[in-house]
Length: 77
Image (tube, rainbow, N blue to C red; front, top):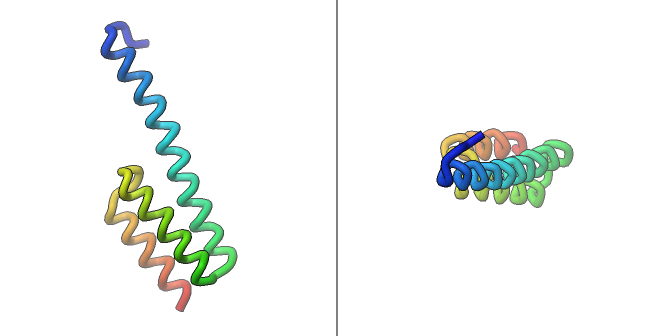
């Protein structure tokens, strides 16, 4: 456990960020799975949106988001 005051604050904020990151990642994965289950343009745009939001907020890297979007768009063809 952290001892100093600043370490305690950092621990608290890290816990909140971890929860937020996990939720964002889960939303993106759910949207991707929804698209894979039913290949429609509407589901594709939802998946793209979720992946873009995750990348914008730093949960996943932008290049990984690009790779995911590329692979998803190949499936629709």
